[in-house]
Length: 347
Image 1 (spheres, rainbow, N blue to C red):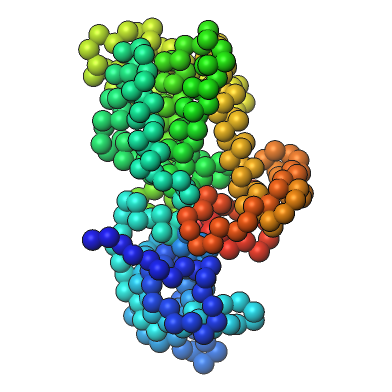
Image 2 (image 1 turned 180 degrees about the horizontal axis):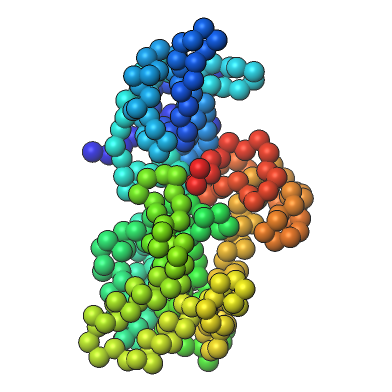
């Protein structure tokens, strides 16, 4: 059964009848001054957030809508102190999973199926047969690849949305192919291996069975680079006569791609492909960061952002037109954005 959602938080207007699916971000049971229980729900979808209040049967309905649940609710929008809220008259819990989360959480605006097809096609162009075998072993691992297609690439900094890991990985692969044309001395197969595998550990660094998504226990204790090494070694072990040096070089790219120890890399880049991968990874992340800020800014000419703590500077960006209720890779920045209705992926 295909999940359908037609009414989005950002589009709800005063006095509108609403019957649709929403993700419960938080739920709070309280009492009126007269002692009557009521339920306040912070509801969200991929376009933003809206508050819902349940005035009748609050105690009975509260167990159906804990944080992280998806509910089908009915109600009417009402303007309260200049903000649209929902007066909820009925709700029921709904079970969803997989790609359907993209209706409720920030998601890539690109097509996941098309990105996946392009990435697999690039993998098949790898000349080194052993590296190609390794990459195809990752692609053919159904559980691993399904997680790879939908995982975020980070918690907050860049590509922090559903499908972000696939989008970021494909971006690096495109850059790698372009740079290899400019610098023929680069080992294209090795650089593409680094681009595909560098963030593979993100599929286990984060726990994203149900929101709010957060770091997994394994992710906090080991980090995505160490997790990636373990995953790569498992694949290498299953490939007959895989060259040890090739495996070592691929692993070096993975554990050095942040460029220095202070940024979390166990090793610093020591081969030219590792240097290039570090620069390309940083470039793609920064461009995504700029895109996010541009989408949050009013449409128009160059304008200053709020102070960006992660970069320790103000940024001068152009604003992009609003994208409406479609999938958006926007997420609130590290500091200072005001009045945004785009929800946080992480609660």
